[in-house]
Image (cartoon, rainbow over all chains, first blue to last red; front, side, top):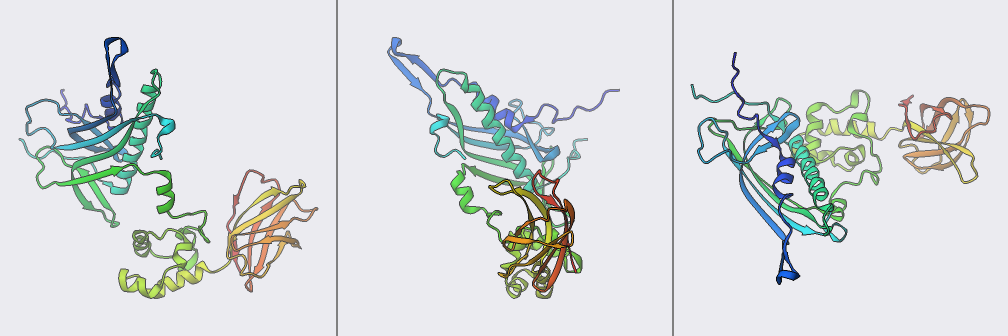
Length: 95
Length: 256
């Protein structure tokens, strides 16, 4: 007997999504040998997001699964986040 | 066939926000770990976060505001805009109630007997941000009745209960000379006049006295027994045991 697939089966923790989206980004490129070096100082992330409040009031999310939205998809919310690249020891705004 | 799908349960908004901030802490920890192995000891610091959530806002039976995420084909959902920003430790300390500095940090649940506040009044006080007996004592019952509808008589009864002396527990401590002393913990244990204290029926020397604690020298021949504090014309009791050396021991006392 085949069971209906839950539309939320591939949602992940909001914390995991943030870490997985931002973590792999390169922090710098180039060096003195090639004559230029570019370093990242900040990052703005603005993406639509599939969202569900799950057990334990945990926010579970997914980036959009494709270009075609169907009536079987939950309505998308939106995430906008701003990150700075800092040295932890010098981060005066850290809590 | 394509009707609304049955959705998950609703959660109190405060639980959701606590879970969300815990997730942000976890994300920050994970990001710090990912870059700590590089040559540049830098980390991504989340400064600002905005979330638009499609949710249904409900009020539960107990008056709590609940959130339930909208599902496919569900019409009429609200959009909840959440803006979170970095809060530094000085800002937290400046804007939070200092429980350590509270003159009476008992919770409202600690008020005993028939003067205990009912659930509806407790909920309204919670909305006011009143969570400790010390905060309760600062309220004007007449003003609270006029604005929030909590009967002044009920608040006055709770304030009278809050003013009674109470023994909540004790801890065994040592002074600089290595002498064992007993610190009796409670509320309203003195009004400026040093209380009379008996341990296991014997009068003992009171070394320090404040509304929240009384430090006494225990009798040499008694290792455990009843605590009696005579203050404000009342006698309150508890128990002590010199073998309890692992921090405060909660023992409820009784007013007689």
